[in-house]
Length: 123
Length: 123
Length: 123
Length: 123
Image (cartoon, rainbow over the protein chains, first blue to last red):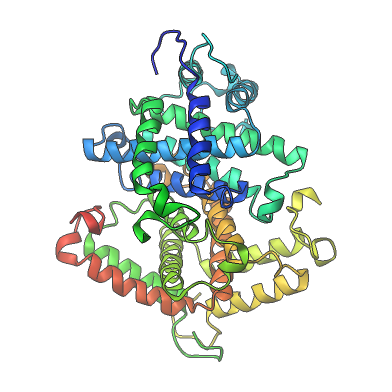
């Protein structure tokens, strides 16, 4: 992931294709219903959360190396399930994310949302 | 997200940069501790899960258009928090995901994992 | 937990009191902010969920004994955090649950909700 | 929920019985597989969590009345699914909770756990 333009395949495409292959080789498509993948995604998100549950916010920003390494793995797991679930549902993740940012931009207009953590329904 | 090589910026980089800008414009960095972002990620994963909780696995694979549209938004939200949290922790997501796939390949070798949904600790 | 009237202390009170004592003995109140307890509760709920993620609905109703034992422990963990968080927030759980059932009864009136898994906002 | 001995039915029994009746009247047993109930429980735990995600730990201990009222409802929802899932799995919640406290007592012996938020596997 470099900051410069590149001729590499897009990360989200690479991961999608590798995961397809990974599941096919293990005959795992039978388990990968969207329902089950959404569960697995939620479980991985909680495994990530577990590392933070007793930390102060400040400490969460400067994790010891061993914790950082485990958090990196859990975050990767979450991403992998996001990619896999999107693939199973025929969702183009890049487009979906760009569309959602546009929605968020109108829900959270700078002039009302600045410095506030309120939900848009509470403005 | 095309299937061909491209000179476009990588999706994960584009999203990271847009989210940085989005947060800066709203003065939201004060709320975006890794602890809080991990919570928000988990909450979004559950909002995604909610759409599947009463569906059969078969029905989860053929969502009605309105549900599919909402699931697409929730999945985008999860991805956006994954990207944001990785940025705050200085994690290169592409590298982390590739590394995790390598780990999974050895935990779930094809010959033992084929057709099985067991956890690797139960092999 | 017998089905007959009893002069035993109510379970929710017993658990609340034991957990207070448990935390006090370990000097854990410093970690038990409602925010942290809500995170821990969510993490335990996901550990419970993990046991079900690759099971069919039918198989989830007839767990092997070893899985059942682990699910029993995870469910207990969730309950313990529910009780602890309620205590920290000054919430009487029995009253809260009874009140919520009353709300659900009007959201999901028998005549409209019968045989349907729709959310009340979709009636 | 009084602090004195009582001849009232135990809360966990009352709730179990009311929820049985509630589901039967709505013909909801068809949706209430343990798998689905575990999902619903996890979703409710995240709805609870959502109220805390941007709060400081200190602020989470003194919620504004409107937030407290919503948190009370979400916590009740979690408890109701805990009770319902336990019923479907034939688990006596009081016994399970007491057993789990005994396990925790040995995992987190006072002399090693005092003042520490470490997981027992890290002692």
